[in-house]
Length: 180
Figure 1 (cartoon, rainbow, N blue to C red):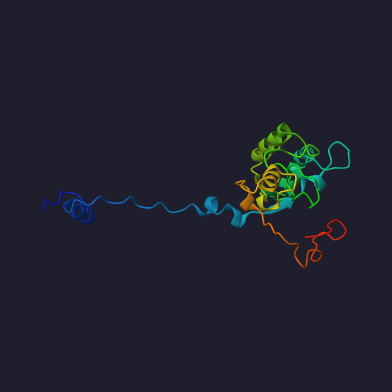
Figure 2: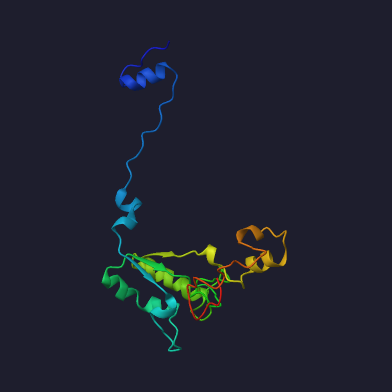
């Protein structure tokens, strides 16, 4: 057994004598930063209906960027964006056809980059709804899953050989949908 080193704390000396490495001491969490969302004012918005910057009747990313000062003055800390990706718009924009792009009606990638930079300058966080369980039937994943039974995307969807008995009940968007 090795000797305790002079000047070492009792626990450190005992651990050293047992040839056990001391574990790092955990650092207390910075709860204000780590749990920022608990003390934040979160504002959910749909870009398409928020602010129209070019008078075409559709809200857009540039309009949202123009209103960041207004949102900050309201006390908004976080903007939670509803889907703004390309969509055939049969499910209020939740039927996304491409997760990697911005709907052309709403702006460009550069417009979105500018929005993100301006939000950051105002210390406004941005979160977005990622609705991977709502792909459009125009999405490449769905098209591939529908085209080939051995497609790796096939298991991402629910398929049935027979039409369900309640196929015409429970529409989320009556008058728009004709079946579930």
